[in-house]
Each structure stands twice: as structure tokens, then as C-alpha cells.
Image (cartoon, rainbow, N blue to C red; front, top):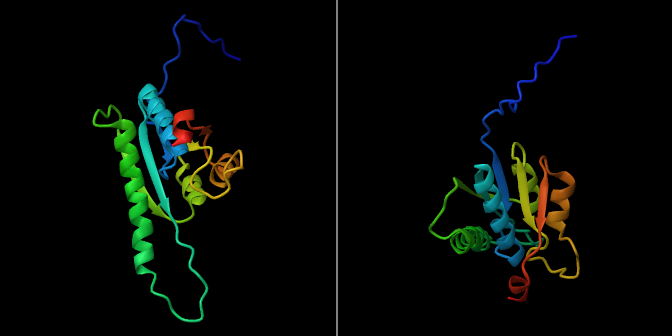
Length: 163
């Protein structure tokens, strides 16, 4: 066994290039999640990674249906949600590196997959789903149980929840 010398100095910390991932769907909860994620990114010097997910559930029909317009609208909604949230929350004075991704697929799966290699995943407690009585939405619940990094679930402020 070797002795460890105590020099009174803190051990050198490795330089980190961390990443905080935040799910954006335009809901009050996702806007508040973005505020928290941006604060963490500034504090830690990490990259802020905004994720917008879109997913079209195809109807079952006996005849072929042209879903091109529906797909384009779903994708554009995700792009607009991320762009508008970024402008509203971060404004023009961005002091962190921002990365944006718009992904096709179920939001919970996209966020869990994107959490690989991340240092923190931040989500709102409820998004735009129809079950407003749930304390924790299905996406945030899936992220808490399956993410590959710590998860922070953020509730909207009273003002945002009212709007």
C-alpha cells in the first residue's frame, strides 16, 4: 500500500465538455425546462442541446392515404416550437453553445436516445398530451425511468400554467 500525499490543494479536475439536453414541445412546462437547462449550461459551461420531436401515427385504412402534408405539418410544428422557445427564453443574448435537433419519432424514445452521452436531461412535467390530470406526463415518466443520465423534471411557473 502506498501513502497518499496531501498537499492541501484540490485534485485537478479533468476538463469537461458537458451537454444538457432539453425537450421542447412548446408547452409551458417545456419553456420552464428550457430556462432551467440554460441556467445549468451557463453555470457548468456545457452545451445546451434543444430537442424537438415529431411523430405521426398513421391511421389504418383500407386504401392508401397521402400523408405527405400531415408529415410536413408535424415536422414544421416541431421546428417552430424549438425556434420560438429558443427566442422567447434565450432571446438574442446567448452565452452558451446551443445545438438544435429535430427528430422524427416518439418524443420519449427520442429524448432517451439523445440522453446517451449527456450529463443531464431536462423535461417539463407535462407537455401537450391530453391527460392534464396526470402529475407526471408519459414522456417525463419514460425519461425518468429510462434515460442514460440524470433527469430533471421541471414544473411551469404559475403564470405559464395559466396561459
